[in-house]
Amino acid sequence: MRRWTCLALALSLTVPPAAAQDSLLLDALGGSLWPRGGGADSNTAGQTGAGLLDGTLSLDFGPGLTVQGEGQGSAYGGSDGKGGRLQLWWSSPARGLAGVFIEASEKENLLQRRYGLRGEYHLGAFTLRGETGYLVGDRGSVGIRSGLFGVGAVSFYAGDDLGLTGGVGGQNRRAVGFANLEWVPPFLPRNMGLTIDGAGGPDGYLIGLIGLRITFGAGSDAPLRRRQAGRMPGFPAFDPGAFGGLRRTDPPAPTPSSTPPPTTPPTTPPSSFVP
Image 1 (cartoon, rainbow, N blue to C red):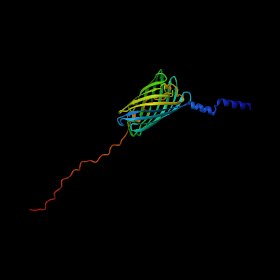
Image 2: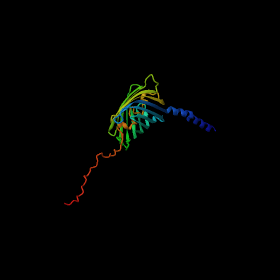
Image 3: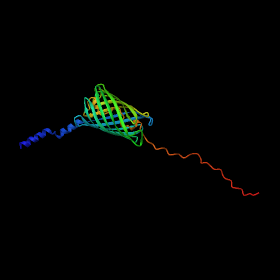
């Protein structure tokens, strides 16, 4: 009897109660909401307003391991768009992170999917960011062909509340440049940051956005570098048209010719008069 009593006591000390487990789970959950607005321009759609809403949800579940889901909805260039990404990475606060991701996006009936690796490396006040992998293109498009892709960026952090990022992405032998500024001002709560984004690419593609990024849950009051982990700030990842992709159009049907058909001169019947 004493042995079973000791065993029950040991289990009660090693297995946390349900309330404690729920608390640990909530402490490991984090996320963000990021509404942005501005303007966009391209050779195909012209100048339009732009509105985007991003959201993330992440879970820290092991020694340095994080899984994160991300989604985006957008409206600009005369069409709506949507995209999502699922990531898994291992991170070290002193060194950076390494992970894998899958991603899909759709805009103007163009579908784009990416499968890749990503990494971040901290070097003093700088963070080097990179992504590479395989792009699955859209057979019904012009400019979104299957092949390799790559994105690289450098972020500079002036303290815990200000970050500047600039980079370039390439696929299908085309490139997009992008930049981001995020600032956590003293007049806002620690979990809010003001953002400015801009990107430019082929076929006159331009977009500029101002937004407010709100983080919540685990790490919501952490330094900005940590809150930007797993991101490529400013890169228009979920826009297949950023690299000049267009929906393939069927060739126009031939129109009837307006030239009247050639006429043949009338034939004169032979005369029956005999002199």
